[in-house]
Image (cartoon, rainbow, N blue to C red; front, side, top):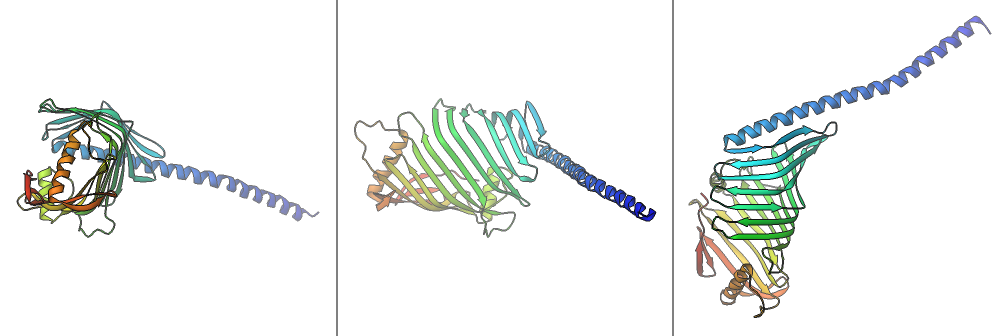
Length: 352
């Protein structure tokens, strides 16, 4: 073998050694760079969340609403952002109300920071300056918030095993339980409202709800569309006034309520008026599969339904309600004046 061949062989081995070492170092260097970039992103977003919370709290405090935690942490590195708050208290000076919740956990994945899951730990207590008091508990209370560049896009709240024990300022006790409660609201995909106003689809569900220990639990559902809804910032009277100026309205596309024997359903339309009240019309169906007997113990809810059913017998028309023969009655609201058929039955207070 010639000397040149030997040198070529040695040089080739050295070159292959350099190539193999680069092949080892490049993935490691890329991984280190990726970790550094991800860490920088997480630290930046952590600061954004912290500053955003501080700005939001300052704005709320300026409006007379304060939030405080006994202990608060913002963590979750490397893949999540977690806000933990123990003994959360909320006070609204304008409403004269104070509330307390055992704990709050808000979580967002670092790769999807606009989707936030919030879980509240019970029990919760609410007290008012006028003497009203309420305690609520649950096995699960969770909310899902989805944001877009223009703001909140969709929200869902679900409560399992909910219970309420309240006492009004007049000493009236109100107790209730529910196997499941759900509320959903989202921007209508094909909305016609112009920003900052929105068309919002609403869906409410309630399963096995009981307001006392004597009546059968009931199940209910409500679906509707609120148009030209203004940004939910400010006091309620101002929001209703802005909603009216924008020609907003609410369409009740479906309402149903049943306890297995009595069924109520309805559809309708409602809109605020320039005088600060509301006008609208609803078609309400009522049906009873089994008439009440003398052995039944009437509850407050059953008494109201019986009253409507009796009125429907005089003022309504025959119709199928929940698959059962029943009566359909018309309820109209003219500038706050509520009428059942042709008979006025009450006046609603103004919204603003």
